[in-house]
Image 1 (cartoon, rainbow, N blue to C red):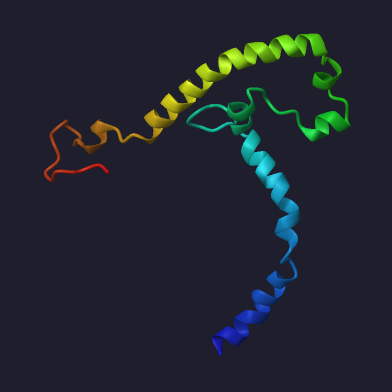
Image 2 (cartoon, rainbow, N blue to C red):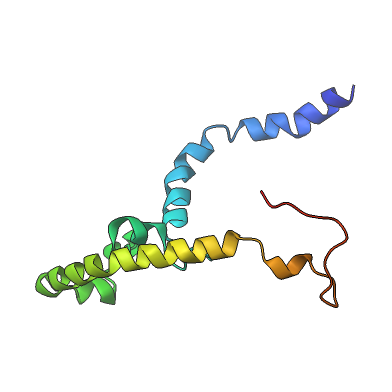
Length: 122
């Protein structure tokens, strides 16, 4: 009885959006790849390709960044980026490890005493 009442309210309304997520998937993936990560402070795009991504809207609307593009300077900047990419990837790895590692002081009481139970970190 309850399911018969819920179906028209939830399932039937959601059914009309069944293939909608497929159209939105490229946009969602683009945003995930071009948003800086909190722990690494770099985008996945930069860590993969060594350069920051140019938004499609910047290309469509001839943004100042696109207008100022010079192939000769871009080649030199690309070489500099390749040189710095390994360092950036190492820094990202260190930050990621430091962010995900538990802090030893969090298990202590307010006065610095050891916790009453032993805790094992996995």
